[in-house]
Length: 252
Ligand SMILES: Cc1cc2nc3c(=O)[nH]c(=O)nc-3n(C[C@H](O)[C@H](O)[C@H](O)COP(=O)(O)O)c2cc1C
Image (cartoon, rainbow, N blue to C red; front, side, top):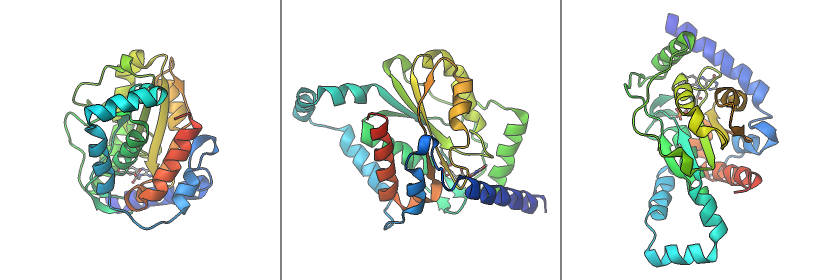
């Protein structure tokens, strides 16, 4: 009974957000709204992985040639990092997914910029597989202002000038584990350009930019991008096109 009520509640919240945010999927008027509307032939998520693998193992000759021919692009690629949090399992509007919506967008950004990737993974993964149960856990974390720990070692942030940071919108906000990341790395992120991106089902960027600026006050926060989770799964050509437009507006 409680779950039905919660589900109905977030359903209403998402509908409201959908109405409110449908015309402004990204901060600064970028093309994310187009992303959400354009419907192209669905594309297998595996395509992103294949492209990334190819990009990871260039022949030595190709590397040398690329560096000689396009030094500016090579330098820019080395200075960007994509940090993201994403879930698999049952998700809103897309059923059970094997690759998270935000993970798909993160990989597209990395492919298009040559950036490195760092996934924020919970140290203790108590997040439920089913959507309704995940709603409850995420809500509780938010009510508790929790700071769930993440695992792994963050790459040496001094090597990067730009850090793209993305996550799903959870109850109108960053998932609390991202605040753990922001706070633990705020000093190392000082002076850098941080560019937020979200996946969502109606709430758009949901204030990710201002919230990120609040958590990392000594960094510069650039124009963010919001992508529909369903589009990330099912309309990847369209999403890639929105991502490249956005990146080009950012100078990538
Ligand atoms: C706990 C939870 C809360 C959510 N809250 C919102 C929300 O407030 N607004 C919204 O538009 N979508 C919301 N969603 C939908 C997700 O943002 C969306 O499905 C996202 O693409 C999931 O990304 P992922 O596959 O990378 O985890 C929520 C989903 C979950 C699981």
